[in-house]
Each structure stands twice: as structure tokens, then as C-alpha cells.
Image 1 (cartoon, rainbow, N blue to C red):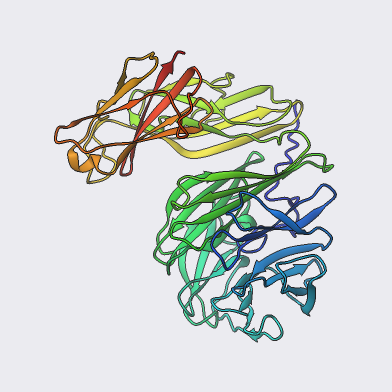
Image 2: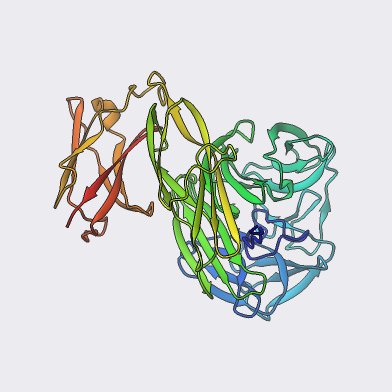
Length: 484
């Protein structure tokens, strides 16, 4: 029997008591737009990296210091870091090797404040003079075990995410209106159960905005979901699925950074990725910032469509990675029964409801897995996506199909709905190759032409492609075949 030897690591650390990955702790926003710092692997160990272009390129500024957590100040060039003995250091030179100065002791994970020279030690204390002295907080009303903390962009408002082993399956979001002197329960969240210490929060651009990475594990398989709140954590909405990650908000509306990485037990495979979003985590631009050894071993997948009326036929697309990737086990409703061993199977859902999907891949002899909860939504045709959009499947189709060199994609939408609609083209790997804007029409039938090129104007190759209509909160998808 194959043994589970998963070496998928959240960031570049092993899963140890010291690798709790919180926002602003192993990745931090700098004071300028596009500037980030993060802890990542080097060929011989770990180091601190700086990027000024949203993570597209990154420079290792320090490969010798053994720091666990970092955060950047609002002052240009000022970075804080703590080591394993919990000592605080400061750099006035962008974290450059040799520029670190000892500042204080008894510091743990940090996040930066709202003004220059302002840094927090979790919820317990903060400094207003670049870490020279600290002001203690009372944090009355605090309960449970610390998980993650953050301050809001609004003065005095702060958050703490905690859990209590005596209260099963619950995360508590605490809020403070007086800079952590007093806290109260803002929300009780269902703990996905399994990894309470890895849930994390980070603030967004506007006051009251929070992102949360909610983490679970099932049969040794991680589940990581991005959630969003715009009302100080009182209500939350699901945004996307993540691979093991650390998150931090940016300096623009809807901006979010996700840091993820992989390392094997002996350090012969090391990879680091930065994912950057400007639409609240709905889509990401991905950058592979460090590559050492063979391809990373992980499991991931997409599906088209993810919503529709019964019976709903869904094409699943394997996006897993690994040098020795050899077997696929699909469970289309996460009921413990393997439904397919194909790499890119097709499956038809006959009944309405929400379906969680699980994929396990084998990498000879290791295995990895991924679960997307409530991923497929099958309706009976009478449900609507929201109150503004019409019912049904919009009569989405394309002709000719197969096609060469172009095809016309048509669908039914009212002129008002078409104003914010678009068609997206994806290849079989789930990579978006083309976005086609939709022009409003006085008639209900709208059509756009795809000429078989990508967003850069280059011809795409022959093969199966998926076209997705996105209008408001609704998405409808179908597939087509390009023959060159």
C-alpha cells in the first residue's frame, strides 16, 4: 500500500510548531505599490527576497540571516525581522545583508502599523519608535489560542483570529475598537477542522476589508480556501481555492498577494511562487520566482463548467505537477468511491446540489491530493445566479464546431446584462488564452467571433478549448475543437 509522504509545504518551511504562516509574517507589503518582501528558499538554505514589480522578479537581499518572520515599515527601506530566539532586528537598507541592528527581545510574529515607525507584536504590544520601546496592551476579553492577528486601516480597529480546543470546529474572530485594549467576538466561524493553527487573516485596501485563508486537512490532504469580508469580519464570502499559502493585502483596491512554495525532505527540490490579484482573489497573475531541482510535486485541477442545470456534463482538467506523476484517482462527489482513473475525465451529474471534488495523484511512490469543497453546483433550471440576471443557460453555443480558422460564439442576454459580460477562452490545461469583450445589443442574441488567437495576437495550437460566458455572478461554459 502506498504511503502518504506528502512534502507539500506551506511556504518554504516544514510543518513544525514554528511554521505557522500568517499574513505579514513571511510575506509583507512594502510602502510602495508593487513592493513586497518575503522569506524564500536559496540553493543552500533560506533568505529574504525583495520585489518591486508585484513579484514578477525578486532579488535575494540576505541569504545569511536566519529569520523566521518579517514585516516592512511604512518608511521606505525599513524592514523588521525576528529570529528563532524571538529577538527583533531592524534594517534601514531594504533588508540588505549586514544592515540588521538588534532592537528588542521577546518578539514573535509581527505586522506593521498605520504610520511610520509603527510595528505590532501580535495583539500584545506595539511600538511607535521603530521598535525601540513598546506600549503594552491589556487585550481584555481575549480567549482561546492565538492564530493570527491584523489591524484595520481605520484607527484603533484590530482583529485576532483564535481557536479553542474545548469548543469543537470553531474559529473566533475577535475585534477591538481601542487598539487591543479590549476585544469582543465579532464572528464564530466553522473551523474546517484539521489545521486550526494555519488559518490566517490580512487586511485589504479599504477600512473593514479582510481576507482569510481557511485551511483544512482530510486524510492528509490540505484544503485551502480564500474568503473575503468587507464589513469588519461580520460576514464572509468565498472567493477562490488556494494551494498551501500565506497571504497579504496590497496597496490597491482588490489587491492581494499569495506566497506558496514546495520543498522536499532533503532540500533537493525547492520552488517559490508569487500570485498577484487585483480583483479580490478571483483571478491571479502567477510568477515562478525560484526554481531548484525537478518539478514540484503537487495536485491541482480545474473544471468546466462548474455550474449548470441537471443533467450537467463537466470536463475535469488535471493541473498537477511532478516528475514521476503517473496515476490519477478522481472522486466527483467526495464520497470515498473512486469514479475515474483518467487524467482529464468527463463526468455527468444527474441530480441537483453542491458537490465536493477530490483528486489524488501518485508520484511513485508518494501521493498528493486536493479537495475543492462545494465546487460543482447543479441546479434544476429554476434557480438564478442573482436577482439581476435571467434564468436558464443563455442558449450558449458556437458555430462552426469543430472550426478553422474562426468560430462565432452566441448567447442570449438582455442589453443591460450584456454591458458587463465577457467571453473567456481556456485551453485544456485551464490556462486562459483570450478574453473577448461583449458589445451590448438591442436584441437578446449576442455574438462574438474568436479567430483562434490569444491575447497577444498569436495563433493557438489545435485542440480542445473551453469558452466561458461571465455575466455578473453567473458563469456558463462549453467546449469546442480547433483544427489547424
